[in-house]
Image 1 (cartoon, rainbow, N blue to C red):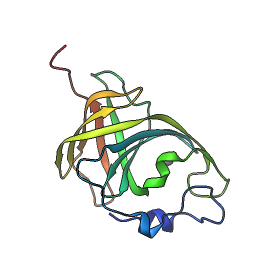
Image 2 (spheres, helix red, strand yellow):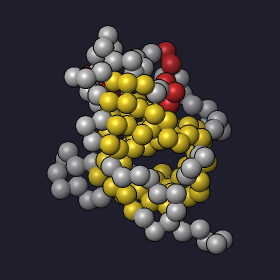
Image 3 (cartoon, rainbow, N blue to C red):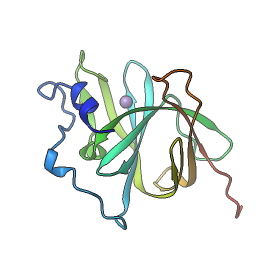
Image 4 (cartoon, rainbow, N blue to C red):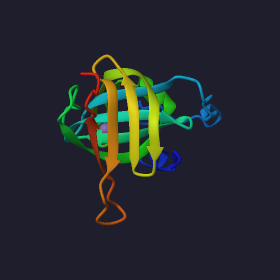
Length: 160
Ligand SMILES: [Mn+2]
């Protein structure tokens, strides 16, 4: 996935969201700490945008309900277009009439470490202020090509 869809959906003359800079798509050093964040997005429907840095972009999922700090709660997470890395610092108001119109605030931020990365399955260790510990993202069997539904949940802490 590239940032083509991210660019296509936005008019950077109208939205304050960051415009991708081509030169900034530098490869991430393998040992560098990777960005994890969640933005609370009050758009037409309130949701939380979960973002994980990978390959110089932010993989992104829209979570319709508040992400769980504890185990035992599974949340739907709909994968959306990759976002530019600069989006990790974005807070503000997307104007009426623009894609995602509404307010964006950073709800949680930190770093993460990938534990398992397979197509349709990711396990990550999150080190945020609100979400900490091991989480899984599991892609649900798609009913059609457009289906990008995943489940996001905290794995049980074996040491507890
Ligand atoms: Mn959003």
